[in-house]
Amino acid sequence: MKKRCYRFFGGLLGTQGKWLDKMADRGFRLVRTEKLLYEFEPCSPGQYRYCVEFVGCKSRGEADNYARFLEDCGYRVFFKNANLDWNVGKVEVRPWADQGGRLASNATTYNRELLIVEKENDGRPFELHTAHEDKAQYYKDCRRPALFLFVVMAPMGILMRSWAAGIFASLALAMLAWYQIALARLKKQDGLEE
Image (cartoon, rainbow, N blue to C red; front, side, top):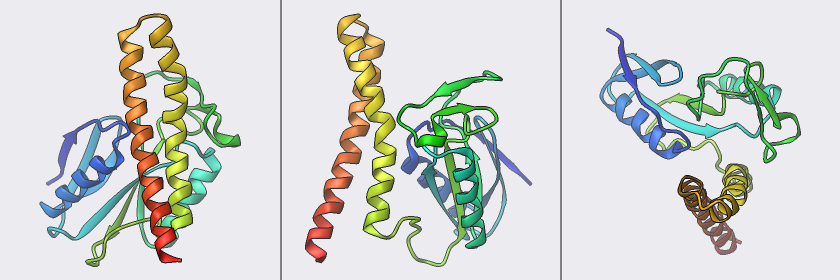
């Protein structure tokens, strides 16, 4: 019997991954995703592990190639939205993205900003980026949208005295701080390992 859950995690990648792991521990395997929907089928408890990755800075081709690469490595992948915009035919400008991903539409990476990756549980922690250089680049890619949002919303909140813009700027600053701390820890580990 399939189980349906309706959730929205936005950019909270770790929270979403932990929730998916908890569902797998309870004996449910992810089989389909939509805007708010996560559909599961029964499996052995703890049989699968999940990792959620931000791919919104990539072009459609790069994201698809990365998903195919992961599938060739034996993983299952699902694209997922990071926003709740219900428009059809929408075009979004992402100045923080890589060259091919700066214009996102329904035909490209709009509503496909996240990649949920599933693997069979082998008892080891599930990390897609194990090399320090890869982790650092991934954290920098994740940090760019938060930096852009902060740079736009902070002045808007101050100049227009907008509490909504101030809230967005504060959330962006929290995300910036989290990724900056993660980068600093990684740099410190690199220094200790050399």
